[in-house]
Length: 233
Image 1: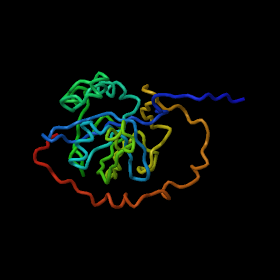
Image 2: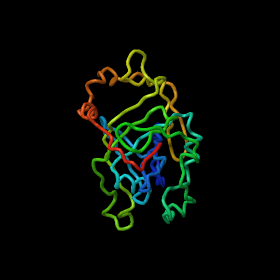
Image 3: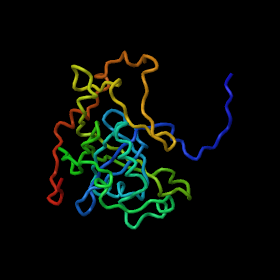
């Protein structure tokens, strides 16, 4: 017998992958920030983010980023990026939560930037999954509410390059991730978790992955990076 109760949890983060998103600051340095409000449709990613973050500022100005997915082995590095921001002065909402300013986040997290092919922000070498992306559009969330207006935005990102660690690839197929090998870092109610063993076979797995192939994949093949002379890795 099921027993449900009406509840009012302050957050509804039931479990999503952690992403380290890299962007370019106005002075040519790089910002790296952890987010977990994200999902994918084809080669498009939708992220939810604070309107006052450095990442949002950089994305609006440059229109590009890299989505780096850490595995369970990078949890400590992600923790080093918690409660710091590239925004100065620190936005009031983040200051209230205990955030402090940090200019060199890569050094703080002891992560390694490596050059991208189609965008200026670097990839994170330690992350098994890296996706170069450009922003297509964005819009506000809860803008109809006077108390929340202007606080949150969603951004639609189009992926242009995908890099996968050979370890997580399916044997004999460089275009497929082996879910038995890939162990993403999951954020659930502000805590880190990893995926366990497969619990049941999926009926959807009978559909060939190629049938989901997006036109964005072929479009991405023609993507070229516009080099910014101020940027160095």
